[in-house]
View 1: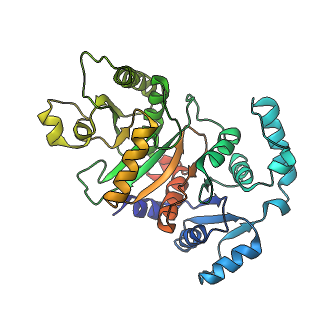
View 2 (view 1 turned 90 degrees about the horizontal axis):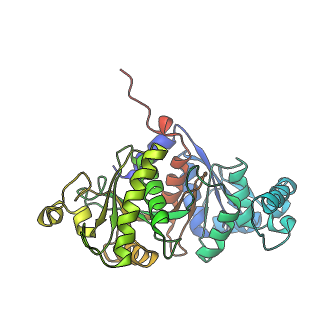
View 3 (view 1 turned 45 degrees about the vertical axis):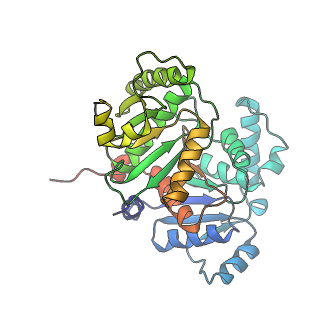
Length: 347
C-alpha cells in the first residue's frame, strides 16, 4: 500500500481542514473533490465563488462537502488585518502594503486562516512563482520550536520498495535555501527527519550528501560544511528529542544502495538504507529531484515546508491534480498528532 493510501486511511478517523489559496484552478478543484469524497476532511477553496462554480461545472464536479470563501467578503477580514498589523509591529516583519488590503489577498488570507486555527493546513503555489507564496508564509506563519530554518521537503514514492522507507524517499532542501550554512543544513536534516518519522512511524535514516564519502582529509569547503552539519544535526536531534540515525558526508549511491555502501567500505545504520536525503545546496537538490520525477516517472509530493509550527506546502506550477491531492493528504496528516495518527495497538 502506498504512503498516500496509508495516510488517507488514517485521516478518515481524524479529518482535517485544508485551505487552498488558488481555489479557482481546475487541478485544485479536482484534488479538493477527491479529498472530500474520501472523507479526509473539508477542503477550503479561496476565490471567486461564481468562477469556482463555473470551473467545477465544466469538469462535472460536485462541490458538496467543499467550502468556498471569498476573502474580500469574509467576516474575518477585520481580525486578520489586526493580526497582520500585530505581526508587522512585533514580529520584525516589513509588510509591503496596508494590512487591510493584504488580508484580502488569497495567500495572506490562507496563511492567516492556518495561523489562527481556522484551518489545519494550507497549500499554495499552483499558479504563481514560489518566491511569492513563500514570502507570505515566512511573514505570517510561526516557526517550529528550537529551529531557526524554514526549508522544504519533496517526497518521492517509487515502486522499488528496496529504496528508502518501502520505496519512499524524503528529499531536502529542494526549494528554499540556495546556499545553506552548516547550521542550516543541520536544521534541514532534523526537521525533515522529524516529519518523515511522523508520516511513516519509522526511525528516519538521514544521509547528508556530498560528492565524497567520509573523507578524512577534505579540502573543499563544501565537503567540510557537510561534515560539520552532520555533527551539528546529531546534537540538535538529541537536544530536541528527535529520534533519527544520521550520517554524512555520503555519496548518493552509498546512501541508498547497500551494495554500493559495502563496496565503498561504508558501514553503519544509514549506509545503503537512507530514507532522508539532505542535499548540500539548492542546485543539487532541485536538479536531482526533477531528474528523478521526469526520467524515472516517480510520483512526487510537495514541496512540504519544514521548520514551521503549522503544516504548509508550496506546490509546483506544473503539479498535477494527483500530485496536489497527495500533497494535501500529507499536510493534513502532518496536522494530526502522531499519537492519534499511529495509536499503539491494544492488547
